[in-house]
Length: 183
Image (tube, rainbow, N blue to C red; front, top):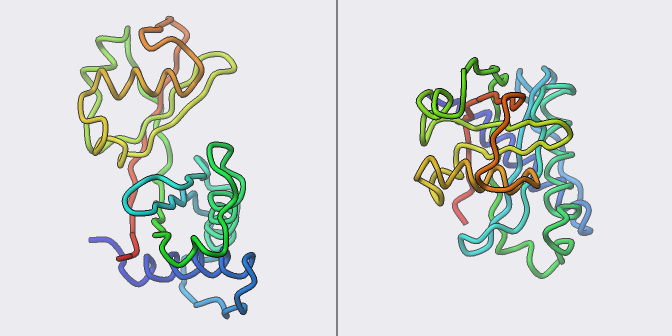
């Protein structure tokens, strides 16, 4: 069962970080035992169900509280797909925080073997080939439920053709616990 107290704390931290950058008064950090432990998060912003920004960390390399704050700011103001969040948008922007498990490299002989190991709706995937890299959170399965389509879009995101495959491709999977505001 997800830790609802941790989730509420992470959502507050993410919203407060964005709000402070937009000139709202600073709010004191809420306490939770996990906040000083390393953690990897993604912060996703939506408006009326449409993506407005999503940035995160694939590896736990800083304290969880810092990671969620930094990723919230990056999602709001530095996601290259969107203009920086404006003050007038903040009120109707919903925040979602995903806490990632460590990524586990998959062992496969070929693409068909990998596809047989894929767990739709569960797996977040990190796709790597040379300097190309991309990831989709497990939530992406909601809009791309078909495994072939999911992987084709992930390859496109990495800057590769949708039907690309090479024996040097490496893939890792992770899971998330996610919390979303009710806006």
